[in-house]
Structures are given as structure tokens and as C-alpha cells.
Length: 126
Image (cartoon, rainbow, N blue to C red; front, side, top):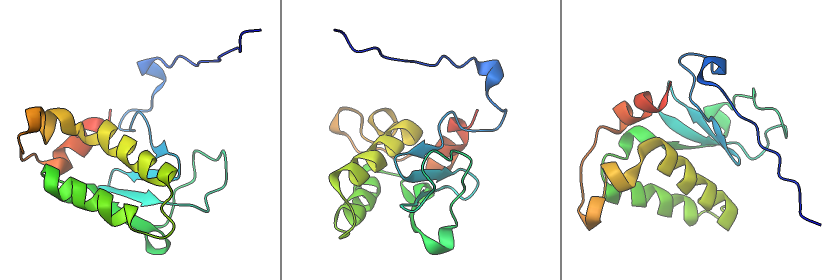
């Protein structure tokens, strides 16, 4: 028997203006105003409206990721934490990929590029 895969279609008119298309990647939360990803491992499961407090959670500053070396440095900083499982690091990489689109903006064809990462976060917000 084939598994049933449920999908949900979202119309652009259903998305709140000024709100990112996605705010959570695993336990990583995008705070688009502060330009940071916040790791909130103790968030209530299934509560998409939960907003973690950056004072009590690990924060990655997206606005500092202006080139590929700085972006990789943040990924490696997290990867070296005792609590950073493969899933945690993978979710961080997916978030960075969605928000900054590094293949296009930071390292096309293996060439290091500089980008205004704060503007990229703003452009991710609808």
C-alpha cells in the first residue's frame, strides 16, 4: 500500500504581509527584526506562534553573514557545540539556504562574493 502524503497549499493572499514565508526550521526560529536565527530547543512542540527569547537561547546573527567565510564560520561555531546534533546543524543550514540563498549571493561557482545579508533577510520577508 502506498503511503498517503498530505500537502497544504498556501495562497499568497493567505500570508500575512510583512511575515516571512517560513519562520521555523526544526528548533531554529527566524527573528527577522533582529536579523538572527534563535535556537530554541525547549519550544512547545507544534506551537508555531511561539517566539523565543534571545536572552535565554543560542543566537546566530544572519546580518554578519556577508560572505561565504563568515557564513561557514557561523555553521562551524554551531557544529562544534556539544548540543548540536546533525539534525540541528542541518536545520541551520536549511534556514541559511532559504534566507540568504548563498549559492546565488555568497559563493556562485566557487567564487567568494559579498552581499548585504541584512537586506537579504528583509527580502525574505514578504
